[in-house]
Image 1 (cartoon, helix red, strand yellow):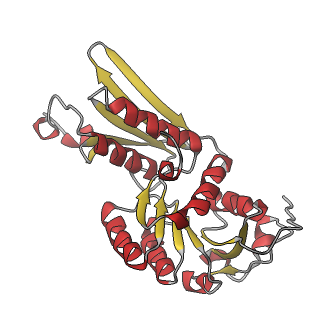
Image 2 (cartoon, one colour; image 1 turned 120 degrees about the horizontal axis):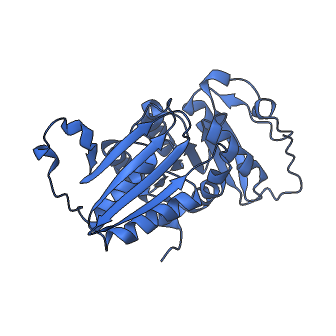
Image 3 (tube, helix red, strand yellow; image 1 turned 90 degrees about the vertical axis):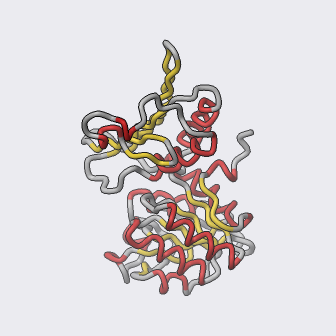
Length: 278
């Protein structure tokens, strides 16, 4: 892969730092940022590759960005937007450091809890900065969640299936959490037999998120899939999104989030908060 970006105006470009810039999704987004005429990649974070040139690692001709080993080092480039694409064990601290440095934040890391986001929201509100947290940057995945919200207004019984590869350690996925959060805003599903009244192993009924039962499947052969199942008398509705092995579907949504996050204050959940889907 060789990318050279020439003849771009240097003014009014969005300065971006990507944490997790050499990962599966992060590296694809970096490519999109480098190719975008209105953005400038000013920093990249990868603890295992700190000190190397990002272009050398990813095969770029440009830009000459040295990979940082810490968030603090990367934030010295004074970005407008910090993209968090690492691991839930460090994501919350990375986000808070970015907000302290005056950067808006786009979150692609899954596994952060509602408590994490409450803490992040307090910091963002105090600093009048935006945080856009997206369980999935795929436009088609966003549409799947929007369609599920629409269905929940009419079909009152539902559950969520969350599929991922055998090696995915967090459960449920960020997409499943986001979907359950959206469905909770519609209302509580009609569950005929309460989970606590289940005979046998209650855990077999999945975990409850805002009243929605979520079941996480982790098996070889899956990348990421999400399915909402709706049931009514003598009929069923399934709304499902399946991701392929490439990270390309997440780039357009990631770039959209970077462009729009500065218009927000506080935490906003879901890419559709900056999309016109009404």
